[in-house]
Image 1: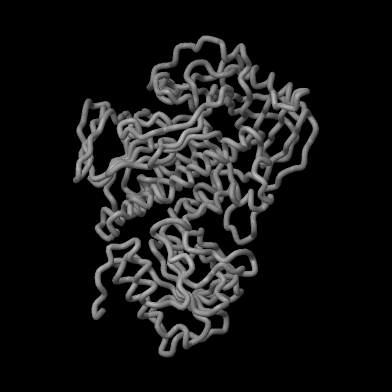
Image 2 (image 1 turned 90 degrees about the vertical axis):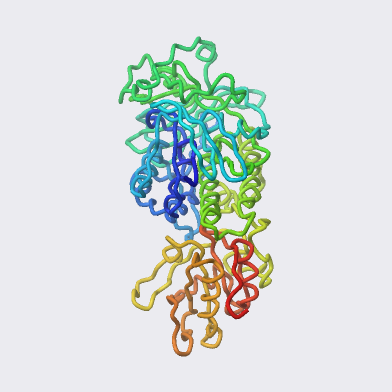
Length: 583
């Protein structure tokens, strides 16, 4: 077996789906007997929707989610300026809210279509690795099993067995407050699609009470979080329900006096040393939620239909490295932090996607030795930035960062995540592209590849988005031409790139509107930039330019002018490139 993935939350499912989609054999194991019915991670960022588009499952997510249009803010009952989540028109997706169990359902159904499955009631208890692979010991419903794989990925959460087995550092701290979560319906007349943040400041100006509500699919339904009252925090925990029955014990409408208990498997282990996540025992009752609403709701409101509730704690920690040898970690196993801005699950999904395409090339034998090291080089700085930012925002609010609102929104949407310092992108200034494209700075190697519209094909004449062209591809070579002379060598560049990547690359020609194709035609698919949007987004005014777009939608390089030498130098950063014939 190629890869063993531990943990079937959104991160582990993403890793398994992407490995299966690339033809890599993997097993996905999960200790829980079934999917938990809790709306834990809810916010889905635009960047995650772009990834799901490339994975082929964004339609199912869009059908199940509700839009996040913005946030209504209140301080001591007084309405503050509203925040609208408006992104530039070239960004293909907005913000969304989707309960975690729905995210897991959509990913699991996609995994099944690819021939995979979740092996439930299977827990990793230990592992050892050597130069050739990893030997893992599992405890399953059938007993103990020893599994041999070439690689092991730990997506097993804040209390990760994989992280502990590797002996990775996990430094950080914990917030002293306890919070309660509740999934309820409420009858207020606030506009749908908006989150609600209502806080109370005491005479000293400090926040001493807080209510945060995130819309969920359904009429008037929200996931609410509030401070835990002292009497609930101090109450002794009731015995947890048996493991198999508790996960399905939550009725559609629990009794008002008691909320369903969190199953033992999902609670934070007391001996883990990490106080993060849902806690076991009795959850807050509907009356506890109503009491918080009576104090803080901006409108008179009655809560009903409590689906589940829990007490939870928050820590902030980051591993000192994202793996060791053939064992790697992703998601909460690598970084935990406040839920401010819905960054956690989305960051973990991008961890898994980044790792999966590199692991697939490595296992397939086409990767340059050391490609996997770029996983830590690219993703650990992202984890460090997210942990730091969410801690600042949790303590001081978003005003802790002095960026202009538009930039702050793009950062929260995770559209500014980039890898300019990565060892596998570049060269950084291949065409001096530090100028402005007319709509903002030109994208550089390591930046997210922008989307644009107005591309028309030679047969399908309706306009398409660039992301439609990139969808389903691995590495993609975009060859932009402004006239017949500039496109004359495009076929040769495409053939070279195909050979150097072991046929792991697809090429397209994009012509400026009015430009003629190469004399004698081309064997490559051709699109016309009829609205000039590609030229503006990619700052191609200087003339013919080549772009390599990675499987995760980031620019690997831009070359002006496009040369065989420049293309070869870049691809050698990623691929075990053979010596081209005749060179």
